[in-house]
Image (cartoon, rainbow, N blue to C red):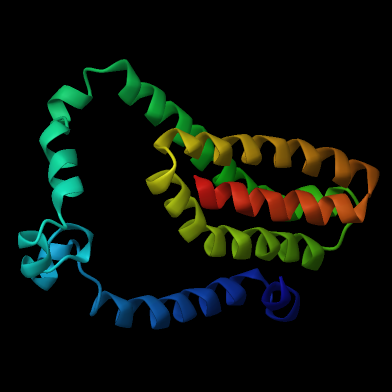
Length: 182
C-alpha cells in the first residue's frame, strides 16, 4: 500500500517483483525436494537412527498408504480436496479483496494492507503449533483451523461494517491462526 501510494501501482508491482526475485532466487539454490536429496530418510532421520528403530512410524505410515490411483477412487479424497479448496479460496479472496472491502467501509488502504499483515504473521508463526497438534493429537484436529477460519470471516464482516476496530483486529488475527491450521 505504501509503494502504491508513493509510486503508483505499476512501479509498485515492479519493485515487488524485483524484491521477490531477489529473495526467492537464492533460496532455490539451497532448497531440496525431499529428505533423500540430503542423504536422509523420512523425518530427517539418518541411516543410523532408522536402523535403531526411529523410522518405524514413517514405515508403518508408508505401508498403509494408498497409491494415487487408489486414493482418487475414495470419497474421503474428494472431501479433502473440497475442504482444502474452500480453505485456499478463502485465502485468495481475502488477499485480493481485503483492501477494497476495507476502503469501501471507510478505512484507508493502508489499514487494509495492515490487516493482511496482521493475518499473515500469526499464520506463519502458528504453523509449527498446528503441525504438532495434528501429529500428536489427531489429524482430524485440522478441522479446528477450518472452523477458526469460518468464524473469523464472520467476525470480520460484521466488525468492519460496524467499525468495531478491536473486533476487526481480532478477526484478522484469528483468520491468520486459522490459515496456519489449513
